[in-house]
Image (tube, rainbow, N blue to C red):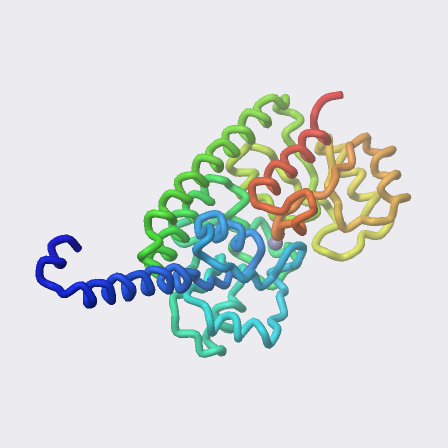
Length: 308
Ligand SMILES: [Zn+2]
């Protein structure tokens, strides 16, 4: 500016200052990037990395099953306005790429799990609509989330290059929190005796967690999927808990308190609380962010598995 003032009359210079101030202000406003994410856990990742520069709209919200999501008419409007659309991939949320196509969206579509080594699903009994051969729940291994974070940061930088420094700094901070979480999970499970590192769980969504952290999740005999278990399923489950010596059982599909009491009394297994796998809780709940969700699950597992 000092150099310019040698050549420009004062009035022109003032005008130039006003114009650049105007662009600085409008530029800051326009920098709010609209991002659509398929489900709550992914929405949290985008928020952590996007910070104040992004406005995240999550389609399958807290507590909602993203596998079986039914799009609403307003979703297409959100997608059309977006500068970036983020989905998990691995067959979890194919409906979002179909929805983006149908709504005429021409922007970037990020498959956040790109580069992750997928696990095979142990069987087709998950009870959801995704590809039965591939386990989509890759975020249950914190190391995979580092890959999600790198993919999301790169896509945000591509969509909003002016925010590159902010996105890199946020991603760096979040990676440090993820590393601390990963170390805590490992240290906590290491305190369990080897023979107690096994649970029976009705929701087959913890394959990645199991591989990463060495806790076996056995599928219950009978009471599987999302259907209510009957008395005969419960009898088979008790038999299984005894023969496999699983110290704890998580069967969210059994809500009848008499059946739960019977499992506890006859098998001696501890009845676990609720494990969050596919969706966060509401903001006031116990798992409003990914990191809070993983810590809640760890606490819940440990209170069922720790030797008393
Ligand atoms: Zn699932």
